[in-house]
Picture 1 (spheres, rainbow, N blue to C red):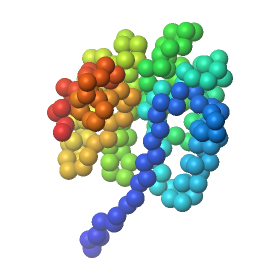
Picture 2 (tube, one colour; picture 1 turned 180 degrees about the vertical axis):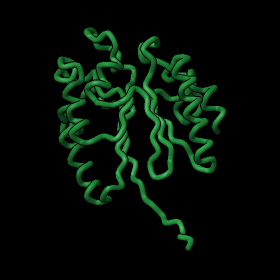
Picture 3 (cartoon, rainbow, N blue to C red; picture 1 turned 90 degrees about the vertical axis):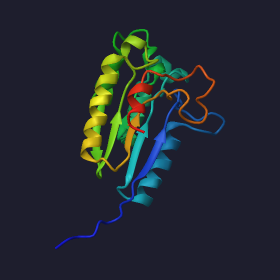
Picture 4 (cartoon, one colour; picture 1 turned 180 degrees about the horizontal axis):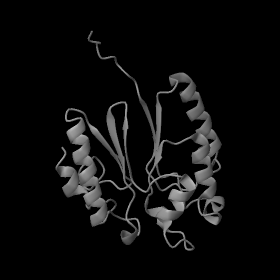
Length: 193
């Protein structure tokens, strides 16, 4: 007996560049307010929420800066983020020798991850320590290429989702004629249009 494929819904909730916004400013933002919105959407969409953050969650309000983003991370853990990657600002802690090790310990996650969710491949990539958070070194590029090839082999007709902080220059609206972003992943990603 063959079963017809059934349609599934996944709601992607994405945040980035929170910059230590623990408390609201002029009534806007704040972690408690964000948690309220996320909770209401989880009730509305049941277990179909995928909650992601693409980094730069610290370096902003004093409470975040003073405690090296620990309040932000505790809030993210409370809100049950499914995946978080680091941005360049997570590399600015003066006391941390290896920011990736610090954050993966606090967040209880791997540095880079490849997960399959409902048949779709999601790859999360943190910037490299050697670039001080402003790009992706050779090891990262090789790892990403391997993971993309695995995903393509597994599901050749489905999109692959790659989550990283820096936009790849000249690939999407807003990345042309700017110095913000990175081209270190451009060659790898160009093999998977």
